[in-house]
Image 1 (cartoon, protein in one colour):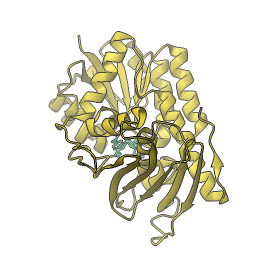
Image 2 (cartoon, rainbow, N blue to C red; image 1 turned 180 degrees about the vertical axis):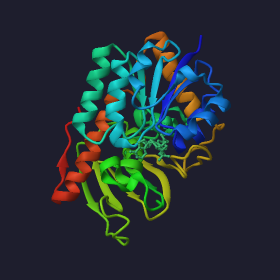
Image 3 (cartoon, rainbow, N blue to C red; image 1 turned 90 degrees about the horizontal axis):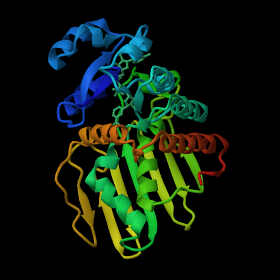
Image 4 (spheres, rainbow, N blue to C red; image 1 turned 90 degrees about the vertical axis):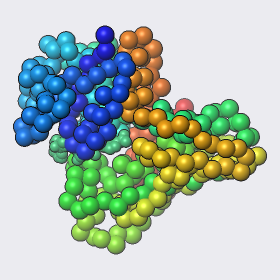
Length: 331
Ligand code: NAD
């Protein structure tokens, strides 16, 4: 039997990526939807053959506990709502996948982990690139030092953002490009290095559009320092374009550009060819988590990894605010 997934929040990512990916999964399928927009219901019901009893809103969401068609709740809401819906899902006895960034505070991320633990349920973060062969090759190079010690990482994730969206409203996003895109630079740097950083220093970029970026940063530059002395230089912006993960190792360099895309990731290297078949990252990610639930094995992208990254994101803001290097105790 395939495990049933309920998508919570039927925005762009659910509609354009996750729901279509769920048509390609082997171990799970879309069985329920949770939405605050009644106008979306009939289209989703028809398109994905979802019965009335499996349609929830944010008020009656907790009654999902009585629905055996749902094994996993996938939270795809604005960042500040991740904690509440993850905790409610765990209390309803469901396993949870929560989108990135896991939460808008360390405290929330810790509460999410505790709620899932207390309920005896698994928690995973929507880190789809851990199911992408290009990014995982970079991770393998980092972990196994295939091309020698890693000397330097450069990570860029920048995308222009339209005005008026929740991503530009600090209350709902917890921050600007750092939260949304910078998390890919953090992730990429850490798996490229194959270790956790010991400190971060950050500098916020100037606001060229003051009104648009009234409550969040427009851009950020940050540098992660690693125990071996290597650094990762990272840039993220909502008023620019860029998508890169470049690594300099003892024996040569390699890079992905674009690095964090759903499709069309390309590899280049001074050493070797980096070329793979396209995979559906989201389908692979959800199938893997379903397999983890079925076989009671740990996920490679657990809540603890999300928490680690939230700690780094918060340290980036702290450093930008104080102008000081912030030490990280991530173990
Ligand atoms: P979106 O704006 O397209 O969708 C958000 C959904 O939340 C909408 O359906 C909206 O109706 C609903 N919502 C409920 N309460 C809301 C409120 N108070 N304000 C605004 N919307 C509210 O956003 P999205 O791009 O689908 O992003 C959703 C989450 O998924 C975010 O956490 C984002 O970081 C994450 N995401 C991850 C990836 C990835 O590659 N892993 C890609 C895109 C988005």
